[in-house]
Length: 281
Image 1 (cartoon, one colour):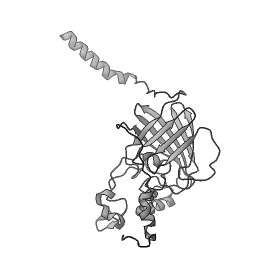
Image 2 (spheres, one colour):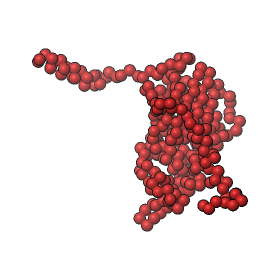
Image 3 (cartoon, one colour):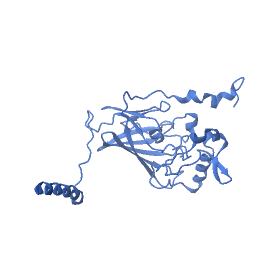
Image 4 (cartoon, helix red, strand yellow):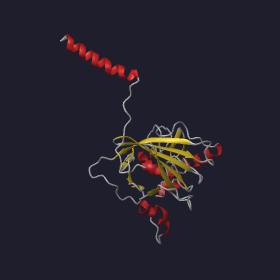
């Protein structure tokens, strides 16, 4: 009995001492695609509050507020939504604060104060990069030996990731031009040619048409991709900054991207006033 107890104690001591001896678990090795690179195929989704605000934030009474007698209260356009328009707290996906230029902070604040009329998401405009990644809806990666394609449920957005650089984007667009390459276990995507009409979140964080994003997709667990995006925009920020988050594989039975082409859902908002007999607002 004493010998058995001693063996158990020795085993426990060994478990506790192992991390202190410098031993580390081997790095995760992702399943391989046919070309030998990590297999990123699948339906993935971010589970965080970044679409509300990419920075760390406390709960707020509404996405758009005005000053009340004892602090901020919901602004009239969102008041009828009650708690539905509230902002849940989030730890953020940015390391520290976004390094805005002083003059750019004023525009960010204006965006926030007029969220209901200025946020591109309200009108179902394409979300841009990187916001498409952490919209509260899934995305699907299609990876072959010769192609890499990402489809997003939100607004039917898509991205064809070029594996051979075609040169500068011929025109700026909502989702930009993406060129990808492998760096070891990581798929790196260089995104340029984006217009200035998208935001990073509902909190009014924005960019100019000089935005340059470098994304990094690394499979770090059986059902996890670690996603990083480095943001550079000399017109708005004092230096490049980074956001990072896990993307989780959707394991629901029968999971698939569904149809959410929301343009038709905002027709009344955008064009209802032009009816011969406009509806009461």
